[in-house]
Amino acid sequence: MSPSTSPSTLPADAPRSIPGMLAQRLARDPDGTFAERSSGLGSAWTPVTVRGFVAEVTAVAKGLVARGIAPGDRVGIMSRTRYEWTVLDFAVWSAGAVGVPVYETDSAEQVRWICADAGIRLLVAETEAHAAVVESVRDDLPGLREVLVIDAGALEQLVVSGHDVPDAEIGRRSALAGRDDLATVIYTSGTTGRPKGVELTHGNFVAVCLLGIDDLGEVYAQPHSRTLLFLPLAHVFARFIQVLCVPSGAVLGHTPDTRNLLPDLASFRPTFLLAVPRVFEKVYNSAEQKAGSGAALRVFRWAAKVAIQYSRALDTPAGPSAALRTQHRLAGRLVHAKLRAALGGHVEWAISGGAPLGDRLGHFFRGIGVRVLEGYGLTETTAPTAVNLPRLTKVGTVGPAFPGTRVRVDEAGEIWVAGPHVFRGYRHDEEATKAALVDGWFRTGDLGSLDEDGYLRITGRSKEIIVTAGGKNVAPAVLEDRLRGHPIVSQVVVVGDQRPFIGALVTLDAEMLPGWLANHGLPAMDVVTAGEHPAVLEALDRAVARANEAVSRAESIRKIAVLPTDLTEANGYLTPSLKVKRTRVLADFAPQIEELYTDTRGTARD
Image (cartoon, rainbow, N blue to C red; front, side, top):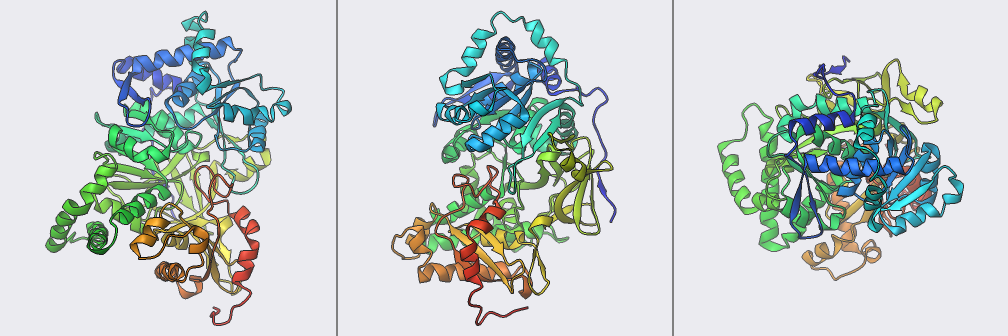
């Protein structure tokens, strides 16, 4: 199949580095708003001009220089998503250094590995608790000279330290980096094995930020564009958007605690959001639960059905019928407007990545007036490598190749990518680099197909393909996505490799469960009790039946096991980007998996 190729529109006079992009923005728009920051839940958002942001960045960069950070040194940032993260990140670059994110949820062993492998010289942690994790492995890190704490005044301390460093020194260092120079080392989330350090260059970020403006400027480069970051800035997806706001002019906001997400959305009023599919699932399921029961629930479900039907009709030559348009207007007044208001009232676009979104959610959100542009990318591609376009969005695909990018699918169905956004290699791992980068192409490990318009559809990961005892190849993603659509289902792991049929491990959502039980006339119970209750199991069986409609009988889920605990980042079963650590789940819940297959009476085999 021919590759999907999008032409490069990178300007000939494009900056060489991230500091170069910031310098251009300062020259063009010094008094424009770069960001807005909040002091807490419900508080007003205070604008920060481009000039003011650059002044903060310069002052902190001077402090790094005074503390002995030399060009090329690695500086770690271990914090939740907050304004100070962005200041530190740009300060590190302005000092000529390399920023290395560390997830605030990382274990002591993960912190030790990242700090040692990256050679971190100075680390800035958010809290004393984070710093304590670092200190617990400090004896194994002789190169780590200093740990500062944001909540203990780290930025202020750096500003004081750098008082006597001349601004000209920061100007000199900001100009050192070229496009091939290292900008950051991002350690993969590690669904399997030890995380690998992905080396991304300044040129990678410059390309991915500037190339998309022509095709996607309608989303993030309008005078009114604004976005609220709540995904971890340690992840490449949020990091890319943070840098993207420099050339695009979009106003940037941060919220560190997703428990406050809805109030923060209401007060910040973003025009576009980035999220992973689980966030969209939560929005939908929460709205359905708030509808309660009886007539209100029936109205919600009718409105949701209309939204999906309307969106699907948009993709047909005839478009929505007059009757459907009338229903859509009524559903909009009764339900859809309230859902948009919950997202801040001004959201026009959402960018989804990290995992397949699924047709159902894509059509639902488009049907209520929020166009979700599903995209695809990896840490190794500096986030986006394919994304749907405003002028042609195909729900269920991740769009065509990102501008300046080539995407091809080989005979085995594996996706390969080439372009200026592809990483330069894995840190200290020449063998893995050679396996991933072949003749100018990056081997993603993901499976997919390209349609006649060059739009890419993701079908799974090559390492996650299940081969049943009957020889049937099953990609678990579609089943897991559909089953997670049930309000009380939190996580799903499809199993069945070398087994007679497909099964699934299911966990229940403790937040959604109480409302669902009340709406169904059931008594309150915890997730363990609920996982054994006949009415709950019957509801899950119906959800399984609906999920199975998307696949053949040989690929369908025959039995499920409800686990007594959820899969979370806190207990180590999810990565910080909310991907399931499948290998660990299969190992730790091997008894439950074995039980699925100990009694197969009445279960057909294919």
